[in-house]
Every structure is written in C-alpha cells, then in structure tokens.
Image (cartoon, rainbow, N blue to C red; front, side, top):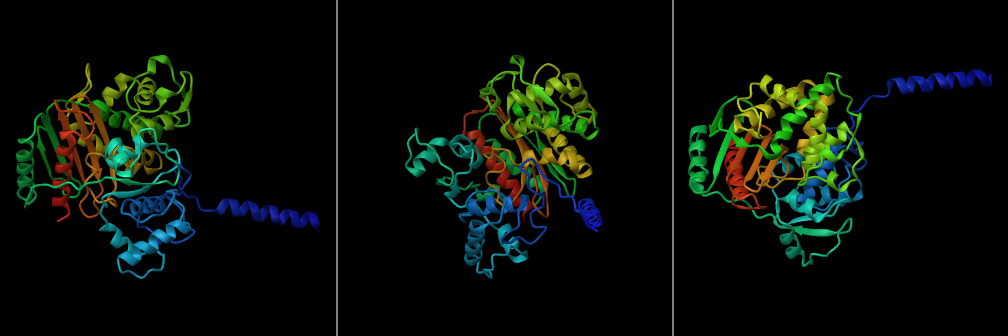
Length: 418
C-alpha cells in the first residue's frame, strides 16, 4: 500500500511539472511582462513592476530598492501617487492608475534612492546630468561614498524649445523647424526620422557619412543575435578576454584581468548597456569583421565602414527598424537585445526630455568631437525612430551638442503626441 501511494505521488509530481506554465525570464530572473498588461498589487513581481518602481521614483514617489518586487515600499509609493492624483488609494495599479502614470513627467530635482552596485558616474549618465551637479545638489564632496538606499536629489531641468520652433503642423514644417534650430549651432548634424505607423520619413543630411562612434554596436549586436537565433552561436558560450581586445574608454571590462571569461550574452549586455568597448571587440572577434560588413550590406545600408568607423543617420535608423521587426518575429532570442537597448545607462540625449513612462530603446556614441544617438521611441499611439548625429561638435559631457539633440527630441515628441 505504501509503495502504491509513493507511485501515485510520484506520478502526480511529474504531471505537476509537465503542466506548470512557462514564463519568460530575463537575465535578472524576473518574469517578463509588458508594462500595463496586468493588474499590479502587493505580492506581484516582474519586469513591469521594475518599470513601475523606476517611474514612480523618477517623479518623486519613493518605492525603495528597484528590484521588480511589489513589496511594502512599492505599495507606499503607489498609494502616495494615487492620493496625489485624486485616485482611489487602494494600492492596486489598474487602468486608471496606469492612465495617470502615462501622463507622469520628470520632477526637478528627481528623488532617487541609491541601488545596489550603483556609482555616481552611472547615476549621472542615467539622468543626463554631471557628477558635480549631483554633488552640489546634495552638499556632498568628491570623496563621498554612496550607500544602498541613500536618498539623492538629481538635477533634471526641463528642455525648453522656443515656441516658434515647436508648432509644426506637418512633417515638412517639423523638418524646417529643426533646420532653423541647427542653423544656430556649430558643427554638422544629421537627422533621420521614421513614423512607425505611417512609414513617413524626413531627413536632414540623412544619407551623409558621419563618424559612428559607439553606434556601430547596434548592427554588430543585431548580427550577433541573428546568429544566436539561427543556432549558430550559443549565447552561453564563454569567450576569453585577451590583451588584443583591450580598448580604453567606456565599459567596465577594462578593470577586469586579462584572461577572464564572459558569456556571449554578458558581452552583448555590456556592449549595449555600458557601451563597453572591450566587450564589443570580443564580439567582433567571434562574428568576424567581414561577416559584419556583409550583414550591413544585406540590409541595404549605403555607408559601409570598410576602412573607418562611419555610418549615416539613415542607415542607423534602418538598422533600428529592421531590429524591431526582427524582435517581433523572434522575441524569444532577440528580445534580449531590445531589452539591453531599453536599459542603457546613458539617458542624456534623445530620452532625456521625454516623459519617464515612455520606453526608449537607444544607443549613443561619443568621441571628443562626436555626439550621436539613435532611438526607437515607443510612444503608445505613434511610435517612431529618431537618429541624430553630431560631428565636429564639442563632445564633452552636457555640451551644446547634448542640448541640440535634446531639443530636437522634444520637438519630435511634441509633434507625435499632438
């Protein structure tokens, strides 16, 4: 009898495992849910809770640690937000609360609570400000140490566009207004825009060659994920960091010892989120430079970097549009790459003036005389792609070129949201 009971329990356990629903998890082990796709309340967890926490913290409603888990601190933040918006304060994020969040805007300063593994450089880049401005705002000195949970005030002044340049009635007028803006600033700029609903486009120097800087990492990682999807590369395959891969600049691998191993997936994440140069060199070593060039040509790119790192605003926009289509067809694999683009630490250009609830997947590029950004802006009713490239400009942090890109971004967003 006992043996029979054990067999029955074993059979029941096997059935239970077989029929447990599968949920997609990202690298942070949180279930993947689109923001707004379900009710959120105490006890729920997932990437949508992570986004909820980030938005509420950005607009001044403390949810504590941003961990994707709807706990007591998140509940307090939701309740405080609901009270401020004159909603029923029940702690449940439903349609009315989601709607109110859709209209949320950045506060100035932003109230931010230091997260695990944060550092002041990453915080400054995340909010498009400078380390010194954060130190000054909080009365800290340059030797100050941050601790998890510490409250910081982050300067986030709004972007202001002259009214006469922010009143376009159609895309031709919008293009004309942007050209007027650019005529008032030094350097050469290129702009390419795609309305993802209508397919309408406009450009300014859109087919000209520009120095790509780190925006080349978009087609590189896109190509990598086509190989992953086709089963030609295992994302868990480990690659050893060699001295030939070394390159200074952005990214954290430069502080790790030569000989360290990283998975392909981790290299891609760092290549996009941190714009890690060494990670990108390691990926290029794996996929092959000639194959990378052929991939760009296969998509119809006009500016191919045979001997120098160049591209065009149109080609970057083309890569982003093709990537989005590819992700829609292969979300199980390429969805990771889109997630990396949505979670880059650099939010100081196209994403800076946009409401904090708007998802932006983008990649920046910088050199001493280059400031670039290419982005998919997921405005709910009228999503679009915007690429702005600045060459022969001041590439230092928060220079005039940053202001130009922010103003163009706001002009485009304001037009799309009318």
